[in-house]
Length: 473
Image 1: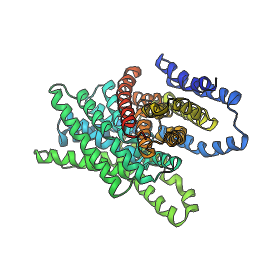
Image 2 (image 1 turned 45 degrees about the horizontal axis):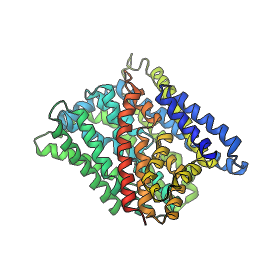
Image 3 (image 1 turned 135 degrees about the vertical axis):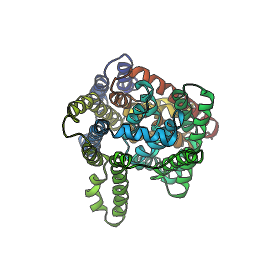
């Protein structure tokens, strides 16, 4: 009975979304049913509920502000012409066709997401893809595929949560996650290249696989050499440099003229600000933990998206250039912001009430066969919450407990869990709604989601087979 009740909220939210209901309505159905079922069958003592409210409310507010800031940043850089200038420079520096697309998928998007998180990589990548001439539907899919390094998103707090809940060293889990990310990086590159190529598609797939291999080697090396938190950003930066260097060796021009430097300024402010503030907070945390906690908002992507948006707004024409921008930003946020918040509420309620643990325990009754389904359980969390952090908060503890009970390799199981939770997050209703909202002519969100979800499910099945073969006693 409890198993059926615990499964109702996510099933209801997913069914509503797949049936064509707006993302906000789907999320509301899931969150409302979770609250009702938790109140009647999974009651939480008030002290515990109060702690959860205190813990998760700041994150919820921050995510909503990040979504608003991301939409504003995308709109203002578009209206100011910065997106077009950067896209033209990418075409000049990397050529046409597949090369600039792969540089965005394996370089620009993972770099932005690793430094900021919460889907900001999509916000930066999608306008560039549109400016490169990609149709809206394909641009949305490729932008979502760029969220392939989410285990290291926002300097890897989700991976840290998983390590703490499983009792594993942070760096060891980061390295193991990097090893298992190889099929993700390869598949994302192959699909993005296939979608970007007009002809010679098998050659394009080869280029996608090569680019994915570079990202994998760079992320793995960064995890081993400099640690897990900055590994995603470092690996993506190395991959982007490799793309530019390869183009230079083939006779490309890498000069950055003044108009392009001005167009890049808002992006530099965003990425540089988040990185500098985050590193400063890490140093402050070692010296004065109390002061670091008070200064934490200075490192939030929400703050730096606001600052970067103001910098981008300086490029608007004095008369008429920004007409309607505020209205478009507001409409876009209303289409995606509430849905994102409600999906987080759904995930938190399931985790705090114990519903997620009931679901994981039910699947674990399969014995060793559970190892094949462990990535699917993690993926469900990522799909519901659109967040590696949220998915790990929901399911990392129960997954680790099941691995111990089965005498399985906990490190390998949790690495597979971490990859799967991040992978299906890119197909979550909230992320798809964000990507679609950034297109001037919104594509069919169900078609966009179907492509990304099918890729994710295929890799999740592969991860399940790997765990069944290698993680068992």
